[in-house]
Length: 260
Image: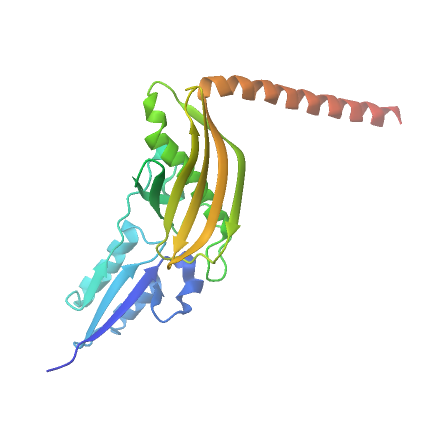
């Protein structure tokens, strides 16, 4: 009886090609090329494919089609990652590829969790992705989207007639380990929530990002959710002051130049 050879690989989007130097990591194009060249045709080989970051429905379909065309679907088991991204009104993003959190849920009154979701065409990756790890600004933006989504889903619904504008009072991120394009979990702990005035909700929170049994980063944030109508008035007044100052400064500089 022939012994079965089991192999596991993680497939990542093309944006993370630098990470595919590892034995069990492939980019989508690398794995499809292997399949087309017959590298996984052997009857004694079973391949299990799991998802890293950068793989969406479109990419999974492309991989599944390559396996079917080669006729090896009985030996290649594809385990696609199907994550449910936060909704547009929660993550405050107009384009789905820019949403960084998925499968948002609540563990108890103060603790929430989500999965990190990285689309290969995310706005933060388009112009800077080198080496093997994911850049730090992705971590900061994931933390920002996490506090937005938690607040929108679990707090502001108490006042359905209101819309909120979020202002960061302070934010600080500590990076402890590299983050790589594999599964990662985000934990969100509400440290304080001031809900007495529905026009002005104040929060402090800690957001931890975990991967491979270690904490990759921790973010401390303080923010306020203002009723949109109230904040727009304040924002407009302060914008007026900024424009007035800029005009006066420029006029003074022009007058000085003309007097020379």
